[in-house]
Length: 480
Image (cartoon, rainbow, N blue to C red):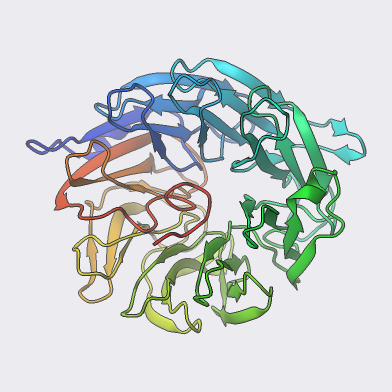
């Protein structure tokens, strides 16, 4: 049982709970919204069993008050995406949109858990575009394209987990799609211009502030080169991404983790900052597309997104990234870097734990005007994916006081889940929602998971700058 492994007991007057799913695990991250109307944020997360196994509880909603199950939805494979929220039923409760492996995506009534629609096209085609066992990634809301007055959804589909490393065999081109949010109907679909696979959740933004939306997306994978692209949303709605502009193209490694949008040039337009999977952090000017700076983190890989915050005394947003040393699955450790947004120089460097695909979050926990970082750490022998000694804790990176444990170190693990931080119930205290999983002989296998709400006695004086995976709103956009 996972619950005794965790060993966490509720503290007096603190709203702590643990929810467990036997034989399950997750590559998703918690996303919160009030689904019950009680003023307390509830938790939605994707889950599943091991790859290619069907699960009756693959999308899970939990009551934020006590962790009890509100509803669950089945899926034919792991639901690896992180939930997006949009009230398409117009009942005042956000509805849930999430997808994952086997080209599976659903719209769910947030109040009842009933399916609004289900979209799945394994080994099928739309026009000339072939789907295999591709993944759906995180969706973004876009202006109404179907004429029903309700926002629709931009989403990427790609990446074949059954393909072997270092070969292009079986890697069909990734696609961007626009789906009608109320029905799941395909409104637009286009293959990426370079014909590569995609694993990146796309971003959308009106850089020119003129109503002309643009899409940022990436191609390539862990062993396949690719590019970071910028395209007109209007072209996607014409089913054509051939005019997409490459901001950068690389060999050997592609662009996997979602980028972030933050104004580091201080010109009023957000810039594009991203990790290449080959361990290169890059920043591009949001107005001109020019490379502002880049930082090569030698002998590392990164499939993790960045946290954005203020880590020194200037007004320019800074970045914090997680980098795995070596080549998956033979990673030999991890490096964590705080990077100056002005010039890409390293502000602080740490070497904690072993591999993990989770991302950090940023918040000013002590109210001193400088953000701290909260992130998972896996401690084990760092010799590959076969592990028996893994222990996990949440680490708080304080750039003035050093690193300290935020949670107890326990014999559990976390492969790829980013915590959520904020105030769930409006009582002014910091809440942290995070996932851990039972240890197995392979770090990537599932054998039970726990979803934890840990309320701190720490007063939360202001909203976190980067409080969840892909930011507070899940759109990759940093706001002061």
